[in-house]
Structure formats: structure tokens, C-alpha cells
Length: 145
Image (cartoon, rainbow, N blue to C red):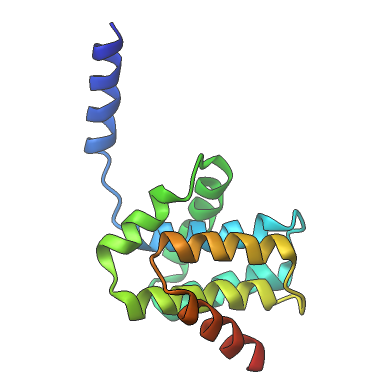
């Protein structure tokens, strides 16, 4: 019976296709940073919107849907690997570093990088296989801007 359930679950996941898989993963990671300090700030939400627009060409309707879906995925996620693995499979190091910079932009949008935001960004950076030196460089580049 357990095998049947697992097979059913695997088949349902395999049949789900999402046109914006990489976009959704990126939106979910950005939402994780927003939620990290338990204070959802309007400036951070605006920064998420700006960063998604910077990385992807989407219509206003697609952007709105993506932001909502990304937030929902983030809230219901058990781990970050489901998002980072999609990005790792799709993007080269330089593109992953750009996403890391976007995470820092979102964290700094309210003028303060909370310790929980920094923690989640570090965790995401590790899961994206970004070297520590690039992690520091990305942080400093965003802070200096």
C-alpha cells in the first residue's frame, strides 16, 4: 500500500509542469529572505518585485502570479533544496551570484540586514555552491551601493 501511495505521489509530481520553474524558485528564495526576520516590510516586497523584474521578462500578470506563488511556496516549503536545485541545474555560477546579490538587495531594502536574513542568505549561498569569497563580495557590493 505504501508503494502504491509513493508511486501515485511521484507520478503526480512528474506530471506537474510549471512554465516558470526557475522564476518560481527564485521568487520563493527571495520570499524566504523577506520572511526571515518575521517582519514583512513593504520595502522588501517592492525589492522582491524589482529583483524578479531584473532577472526575468514577465508581463504584469505573470509577475503578480509569480510573486503570489513564490510567497506560497516559501511558506509551505520544508527545505530550500527544492528551490536551489532548480537554480543549480539551470544557471552557471555568475547567474547564481546575481541571484545572491538580489537576496542581499531584498535584505537591505528596509535599511537593515537582520541576523536571520543574513543566516538564510548564507544558507542559500551554500546550497547554490557559491564560494565564500563570492558571498562576501556580493554582500559588500550591495552594501556599498
